Image 1 (cartoon, one colour):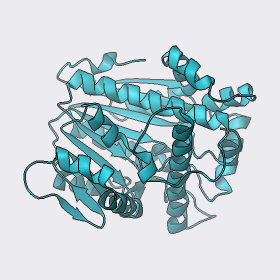
Image 2: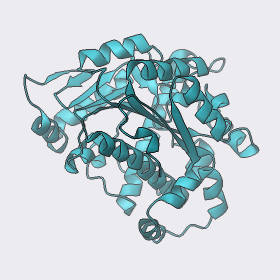
Image 3: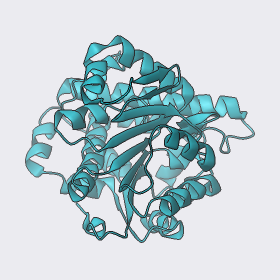
Image 4: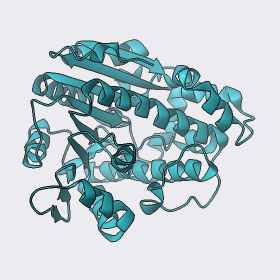
Length: 352
């Protein structure tokens, strides 16, 4: 994750909220003085492309298999550093591990809400593994949603799985939303929980189903109050639920400051960075928002807990000559997850 990470870490996938849709949360936040809300949102949307390109490159090298990402994003024009590829490998596998643990606990009798989903391909990969939840939702900026819907409509390998899993009435689709019986994608502003809930319910959200919310580099682009409102809404709406949050941590040291400065040069401010000061602060924000059990570990720890036979395989793909940089980067990202479980499904026991 060397060069790119130094420049501003494309790890930032997208955020969830934009003026009108779930858009990457990153928008308005504080970008403040340097940029207006529209410009700030645009900077956050740009991180979606960065992350998608990095993922596709890592897939092309052989870090993991994803036959669908090629239909959403162009191939990188230049090689990505081994640090970046290993970082995305840990991110994808770490988040996927927790998602599948939730699906196992609920026996897929649940719904998943992917906040700031961007060009993510998880729905298609879960279908291939026969692990689809009862309903899978994606939320993002309207512009990103429109682009994704265009790709889905024009690429049979993407549209066919949606049609195969669909039942009932005709599939509904327009420029900024698509709704089938198992998959929905819609634009909504994550900074406005009422707007988000209204649009999700129009697409079949069930407040009684066990619910998993996934946010990767989304909350950090929202102000602490905005992200707290979103987390409180989720905790109060679903009696049985889990949230997974992937984003920065340990941002108070010099390395973290350089990361922040690099992003600021791209007019991309981290409005919620104060909550990323430590693993404790990450856990506490979840507990303070109404979640009952919360954990957080940095990505270096996640990397050490992944199946070591596969880690050995990917480490043989490319030579890594900046191990210290890799470790520093991984120590400045984390996965946090929290649950509430009125049905005693065992969500609190989910761990690596």
